[in-house]
Image (cartoon, rainbow, N blue to C red):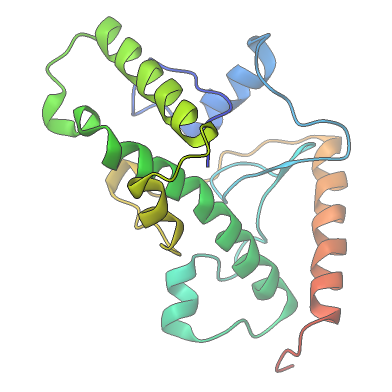
Amino acid sequence: MRFIYAYVGVPGRAHDTKVLTYCATEEASFPHPPAGKYYLVDSGYPTRDGYLGPHRRTRYHIDQFNRGGPPSNSRELFNRKHSGLRSIIERTFGVWKAKWRILDRKHLKYELKKWIKIVTATMALHNFIQDSQHEDIDFSHWEGVESYEQHGDDQEQDHVPYISAGDRVMESMRDSITVEMARGTRLPY
């Protein structure tokens, strides 16, 4: 549960996909996934080379499975496991926001330059504490939280279309993973 990259200073209303696309194509320091690896992205992002999203038009969020029962097909099974892994990302933000109360919205009185420094410093401190291997009460608390509840601007955004040959490669990989998961799981179909 650590941060590997942050593009700080973008207005909150900027669409996540546009920010990611900009960073991935324009920022030399952006940590692209190594060959054969990928980052998990939610359904608000396109599935493309190096970025593996869930199956669309299929149950995805953990609370949907909590209310509607276990996965009923292989695509739901994949999405449930994908969502569980993605919740680690949400928990990382939960720990960060809980530990550094200055990040609370009521402190929005600071100028952008100061906010950039605050966000960058708290992320660096977060990683330092995480890497220190000393038990931290905030990290311990959030390790046990399966689903970080999203609020307002953290909610999934609409998909922004993106066409690429890499899409088909990642969709094929997702389909292969889905089939392998289903082989090891008893599903009601």
